[in-house]
Image (cartoon, rainbow, N blue to C red; front, side, top):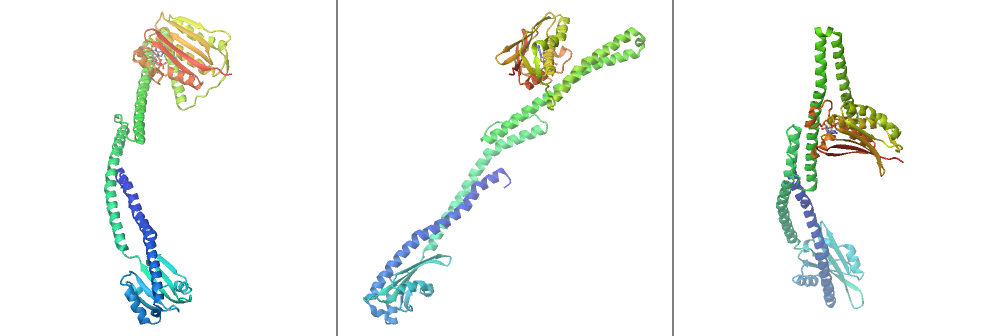
Amino acid sequence: MRTLRGQLVLSHILPFLIVLPLLTLALLVLIETQVLLTSLTQRATEQATLLAQAVRRQSNVLDDPELAQSFVAGLTVSLDGRVLLLSPDGQALASAGVDSDSGSQTLRSDGIATALQGETSVLVSYGLDGQGVEVLTPVIDASGRVVGVVGVIKTLTGLGSLVGRLRQIMIAAVLLEIVLGVMIGLLLARRLARPIDATASAVVDLAEGRPMDPVAEQGPREIRQLANAANVLAERLRLLEETRRRSLANVVHEIGRPLGAVRSAAHVLRGPAGDDPAIREELLGGVETQIERMQPLLDDLALLHGQVSGDVTLHRRPVAVSEWLPPVLLPWRAAALDKGLDWQADVPQHLPMLDVDPDRLAQVVGNLLSNAIKYTPAGGRVAVTVGIEGQEFWLSVADSGPGIAAEEQQQVFEAFYRSERDRRFPQGLGLGLTIARDLVLAHGGRLALDSQPGEGSRFTVYLPLTA
Ligand code: ADP
């Protein structure tokens, strides 16, 4: 009973096994009280009334016990049950019938008293010790005196066979239900167990590190939800694993290269060339540059860690964009011009105030510009434009670089994603866009990408204007 199959079978059979006997019992009681006892009472009352009339016509019957006995003995041939004759003082004169042995004990004194007062007494008994009816009718003479009592006692007979038949029907119904219950339960269990087993074994595969095949989402709603949850879980794990691999590869790649340069410099410095002040100066300068290049990578990693652990808090304050933006763009302008790029920046005066964290927003702009400059070949163009549209402030960074393929436009925002094409470019863990997007989202805004391969890319930051 510990399997789904067993429990389903049991749940189909058990209620029936409990309910059916109770139902049969209730049916029996209903038939006895509402049908059998009622008709028995009716018959006994009619017979007692007729007998009382007969006795009144032959009143000498009551004077002689022998006569009385032969009178009732003659009657019970045609009457079922038991017939009694009582004297006016309530003593039994004669009795005869099918249950004459036990009959005298069932006569109840309250019934006799009622009959002796001139009224018919009908006493119905229904209990464990028997079911029957006892009718006592007074025999009243012409002067209105009670000269005797006629009693008719009937018990419910033939009930044994009724109970027996009901029991047979009940057993047959229970057996049928067991067979049907087992069949339906097994069928249902098979339908439920199959997708659950498939999902369970897929999750076990996942837990043990094997690749998980997608589970078919079929069957009842809850099972479909379970299969869907397993599939979503597997996909998330796959993405996480992919991100983990990418992050490791990127970290090894990006930190390994400057470390290699530093090690080579140290090696040369140890040798005779290290004694030459000019060479030493040049090598130490190179070491410094490599270390400086590593710093932004570590900053990005630290920021990403902060975002993942929810530690990034924004220090918002009212910022006048027209004044804040030009100094932020300055170093990037220099970098672009250095690389031989055409630089355009259009920052109108009198832009509205924004309620933002200016350092974080500068980081967003920096990450977008750093990419634009990094990925656009010399001779290309980088342009920054800002404006207002509806209830939003927007800032866009456009370049004439290689652009981003449609299928990559989602992925570039994933942590540690770097296009294979761009591995030749130095610096970058594949975190710049992830961090930029998360910071914009933290400001309640959004970061959009519009790009055509071969024609360049445009990243636009949208921020809500506050009242
Ligand atoms: P990183 O620049 O460190 O690789 P990012 O998250 O900033 O990481 O960018 C992810 C990827 O998106 C880059 O590797 C590159 O393939 C692509 N990308 C980002 N900006 C541009 C751009 N302006 N032009 C073309 N490709 C870009």
